[in-house]
Length: 318
Image 1 (cartoon, rainbow, N blue to C red):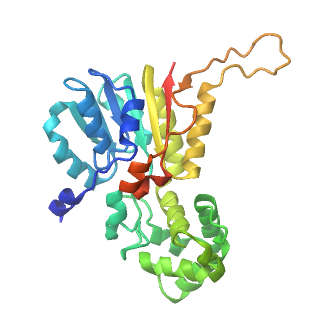
Image 2: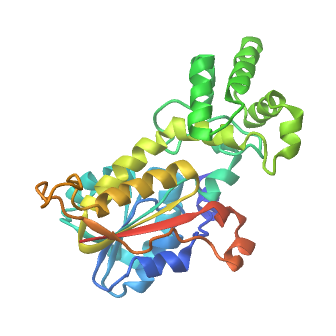
Image 3: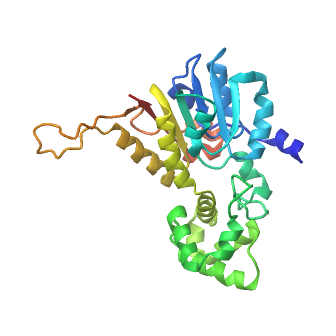
């Protein structure tokens, strides 16, 4: 089974050319790919910082580390895979005795491999166990949440993380169903969600009715927004002056967090406008590389429909 996973792990990177350019890669530099995944971005970085540059690839998914580690082993000591979460960049660099790096990339969200592997439980299109954990060694699964949380707690998660207006109807349906039998399968949940949403609303949808609920549960299971906030702070703190932090997001909740965090780093004086001189002493810590997020072009959208919602934001440390 392990061999099959290694062979089949996909590594189709989103916004590849734009990310490589935005990181201002240079030979001899040290870079962190905080979401190694299939290694597409990592390999692109290694090729562009040859012959001496180093990339530290962080991932909490054993499948990713095994498959990508084998594929990129040809780069020798220039590629350093680490099992961890990108929120722990500081600890990872301390362990490797790296004081600061020239760039950090965070490609947020679920990989194509995870979506396309039914037993991981991320997809509403294939039947599998409702797991959804990025790191399958610990934490509660999506099935655990559905079994343990109250209708109110479930509705709050689905509304907050999925921006689903029918969250309460869906939560009530889940609670009613679990009284009859446990909810443990992806297609079982997808069908429940579809039944809970009014038929008229389903007809108006351009996407699967369960998409927002699955997104919400995945975010809750993995504490994705909390991890993102900690990862942004750790990633920026790890940069050398002139180093860049590039972040690719896939939905509005993530993008809003990145946008607001970057804006705070770029903000200088916070004194009231009526003050004749600055007394706070606050100066900008970074500058935006692009004022607006970078999105996929026509060619990439045709080749990879999952890039449609991707947004790339980049900040440079002053």
